[in-house]
Length: 263
Image 1: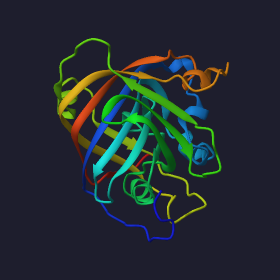
Image 2: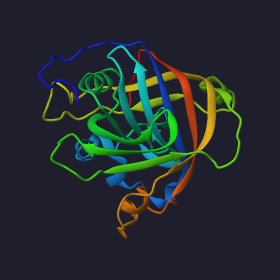
Image 3: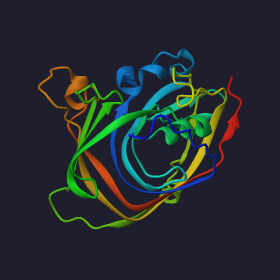
Image 4: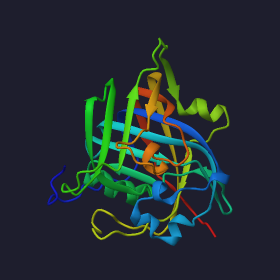
């Protein structure tokens, strides 16, 4: 964990980041309802402006586990939840990050300030090597006194040979899948120097490229024998195993966001 007394390094966009990632996916219907206890960190869940910003449409849920080796604020680990699409009044339907954890203070502040990404700090604990699956990652609250993880995921190979292939977000655009996300304003946390709040809506388009991608399995079974579906496979009602993509030697380019006027 970073030095809590050090001043925050403030770096405006654009950012170029190099990283490795695993992106797990599954589909959910809007009829199933968005589970707020899973989709939001308590700070954002307490903000009516944030959770009522647009209508959730369901769709492709993505859980991303990332290890950044090079960014404008140094290396860090990250877990991202994009729970499908939201209908933004007057703008259309876009994906959105509703819950995200990182291992550093600098990226927390900059993500919130620059792009309305609702970052929070967590402790990441690994069993195995992130770059050589299989491995398991567990996320814990920032408070070191808390011993129980709030999220667990394991990655492993499919069990048979699969080829590697190049991956680009530009390819998704050709399929009609937008690589833009629209984020509503963020509430301010108690530690205002890190959990800063924002006032405007932002639309951000990022580009991703990996010369070496591969299909994997992501296991979302949570520890213990809890009967609660939220705790069993994290997202209520979903199965344990999900198809994932492993991105190696990847690059993310994230530019200046567009400020939107949303009624």
